[in-house]
Image 1 (cartoon, helix red, strand yellow):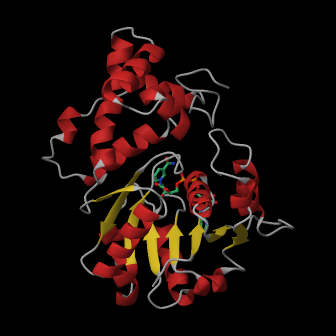
Image 2 (cartoon, helix red, strand yellow):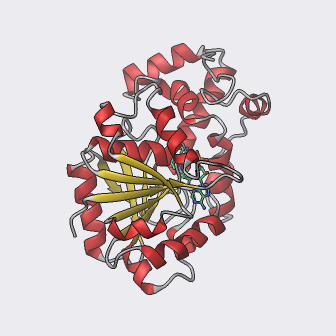
Image 3 (cartoon, helix red, strand yellow):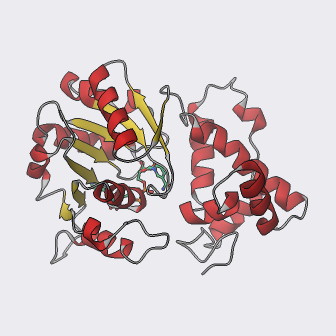
Length: 294
Ligand code: NAD
């Protein structure tokens, strides 16, 4: 089945950015989120996410025309519209029971053979699909985008033991040809590949720079010019994606890896990061971060 219409459920940081990237590629996108209590406009969450993206820097959209390809809706009134979608991307909060409950609803409305994927960063596919019907398990994958989706080229794809080979192939081709992604197929292991390795260089950058009294500007300049990290460097990237994500990924690895995994001995505590989060310095979304941008 060719992918022509896509739904993204969850219009937060990632869902909105993923919807924008797919709209940039010329596809129609349905973007759904919750209905806030007492809201007159029941699609206000997804609509506000769209409006916010038009003001963001770096810009999620290539043009205003791309933004017009996204229709905002909500998961109470618009689930029936999933039957027109070829690929449904779940990008809601990182809570297993919320995601599983949503899959049950999606399964009632999607058309047979449509692809369903989760943008989870930490939950294994085996747990997401625990207790789900075989039909869904055959069409289900993890597609792990990185923030910001328009600018981060990597896409990690995880398939399960029941996933159809054609489903994996189709998403790989689409991500490569239409979204310009560099796709890496990963095993269903905690943190997949990027977070498993990336968490070490983040922890090393924070402790080395701070213990040795380097400035974040120096560290970022060296890492981007010498090691080929994005222009933002590691610290700039953390400000962009949210500093609160660091302990979240660390905790998830510590909880999900077996007790004899070397991660437990190699990981480092980051007291400075804990202090920053406590005081609201979570990056661009908070009072500022490693760079005092706000
Ligand atoms: P977020 O908190 O910015 O957004 C989550 C959105 O989901 C919110 O708008 C919320 O209202 C909505 N939501 C919650 N329950 C819902 C439901 N039942 N139906 C519809 N919408 C619902 O979170 P985020 O950072 O965008 O993360 C979303 C997913 O992407 C998570 O699984 C996360 O682990 C993963 N992820 C995040 C990043 C990142 O850098 N933030 C990177 C890669 C993957």
